[in-house]
Image (cartoon, helix red, strand yellow):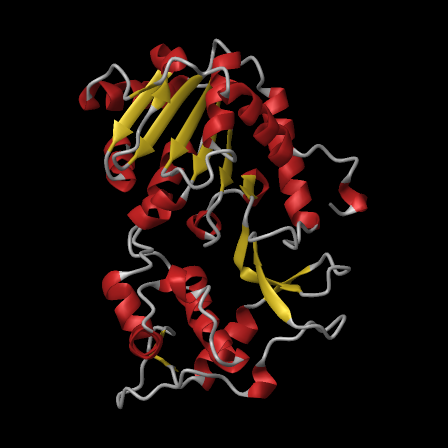
Length: 329
């Protein structure tokens, strides 16, 4: 951790520690909740109206519901050449593939960043969610890295992107704890591969369909401050840079939870799977358990569960998160 931020509250680590310590005491097993879907929708709508504060915890399922799919038709549209050449099944696998050159690797990443950060999602799920909480005292913590909340109009001061941002680079020099916007580089790298902008300013393949799976060597991204190679600002290991903005958001999250500690809080978990439950799911369970005025809601596709200890104050809705959010509006 950068020493400049040690004195600030750290909501990220505070809540993870609390969740891990607390979940060990949930010994009664898990429940799908006691309410029917219709009852759950009605109860959640009431909680959204009456809660003193709402903490939204969003995972990959929310982005998937909005249409940010990493496989299938969308993957084929943008990465068919990579799929044929390197047998890559989806964008996620493509991010870890050992490409033969950096020029090819960064060509892949330029496309990946462009479509998952600088294009809008196909469905307005985050916009619909904002309509539900716009006039409430809310805060959002998310493991997503696609910038969807900002683009939908959520207040940036009420957002905490814990795992990074597709729109940011960081230096490979560990002494450099800054992050760097990559939009200009991404646009140049897309053009270098042969993509052209249409009348709406969106990149697409040229009429002849010819695009390149590499960028020129002189376009490889390099840090302007220390001359080291760039890498994505995505949490994959201990080298992830938590910059000043990250720490400010973490402190804001801690402060929001402290100010509403004993109030009627709705912990609204959306699309959080089993990959990283320690960041959102376990803390939400524990904070609900500790506050008798709190309510936990889980929207998830076939994984809407709660500990039996908080079953009476939980709302579990299994299904497409975007559709549930639409019904709540």
